[in-house]
Amino acid sequence: MFEALSGKLTGVFERLRRRGALNETDVMEALREVRLALLDADVALPVVKDFIAKVRERAVGQEVLDSVSPGQQVVKIVNDVMVEALGGAGAVGLNLNAPAPIPILMVGLQGSGKTTTSGKIALRLSQRLRRKVLLASLDTQRPAAQLQLQQLAERAGVGSLPIVAGQTPLQIAARAMETARREVYDVVILDTAGRLSIDAALMEEVKQIRFATNPAETLLVVDAMTGQDAVNTAKAFNDAVGVTGIVMTRMDGDARGGAALSMRAVTGAPIKLTGSGEKLDALEDFHPERVAGRILG
Ligand code: GDP
Image (cartoon, rainbow, N blue to C red; front, side, top):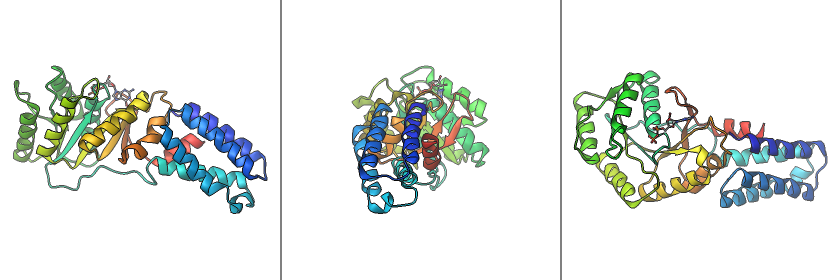
């Protein structure tokens, strides 16, 4: 991921650094190239415009142009603006500040990696934080979904809600919370049904479950490989149900990276975690400054 973007930006910066003294035209020319590189990487247009405007504002002042290493200064400014676009300094962890059992609601389109990510988060909370975790699938759309989550729970060594045929998602959610209270679980991860695309029925179902369970986190799972579509999906989910964090999967693929750079500006929600493979331990915190470092070389 980010390879093409990184390659282009590194090229622009090398040329800038090599020039020594810079004038305003040099900076504007470099920014034009940065703009094209961001657009090629599928960064949303309003985000690109805002990005370039911020860099321009900070980079064309005489202070920068007259400095000892103006090229280096411009690179630093681009880095700072990129860290901001990615969500600011430092990783934003999961919010577990709620009385147990803490509900975490997983939402997203079918195929985004939602069920796998539920298993990954369960494993992490259980292994790293020693929390007692219950996994519950509210997916009554796909017959195999509940079994898939049960198998993931076994692999992760966490609890899973027994499958009862014929219940609605809301009934399953209520049973999950009751079971968690009775069996003293710390965290309940509720994996909702996905759809191939966004529709009103899906949003209504998620809204009702959210209202009924009052989750500490509503995590939207999006596939980085889907680029602009991931951003549109995130905006639609956020507008309809409100999300508290984003998990971006398939960071191990060759996605161009635009989704990661657009998410914060378009939804306001931070990327909290990323998935980088199919295995249960392929889950990472999202550190904006490290990602910016990877992109800018
Ligand atoms: P759901 O329909 O959203 O619940 O999606 P699943 O969790 O069933 O995932 C769909 C497919 O994507 C499965 O084959 C997963 O193993 C795979 N998958 C999930 N997350 C990742 C990831 O971060 N990287 C890769 N390469 N594959 C993933």
